[in-house]
Length: 134
Ligand code: C2G
Image 1 (tube, rainbow, N blue to C red):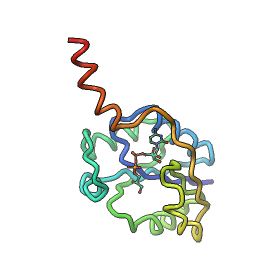
Image 2: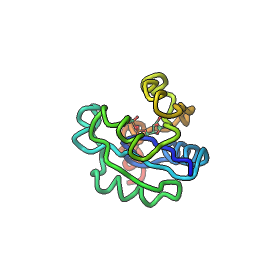
Image 3: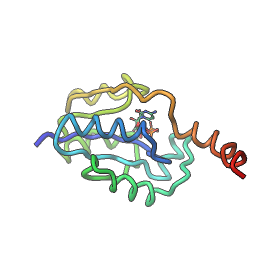
């Protein structure tokens, strides 16, 4: 069984998240997703709209995702790769080069991001769309 692992905040789930989760799963048989805790998001200077519990529930409902684990630190990846016998670590290419140290433990793959969509863009535009509709 070929295991893939990836990480992220996955707030306000959108097509960009689905595309990377689908492509990651297509590289193997089992996809483990480390989802950032609310505390870890603070370290990433991110303020998620949905709570950790809700973001985890939503991720677990996505057909490509087999297991969701908490991401609570920058340092846990090597331990996770070993713990889950991950064969491939996948991230969007906005992270290109940042996790090359994992190449000692598994294949490291950076996939092209989906253009034109991001959680911050949704946050920026949403209030405006709401105003237009009222
Ligand atoms: N992503 C993408 N296309 C987008 C937006 C996001 O491919 N338009 C990818 C990102 O490259 C990442 C994943 O979706 O691989 C999750 O993105 P975020 O939730 O923004 O995660 P991030 O804050 O980048 O956290 O330790 C790694 C970090 O936890 C990654």
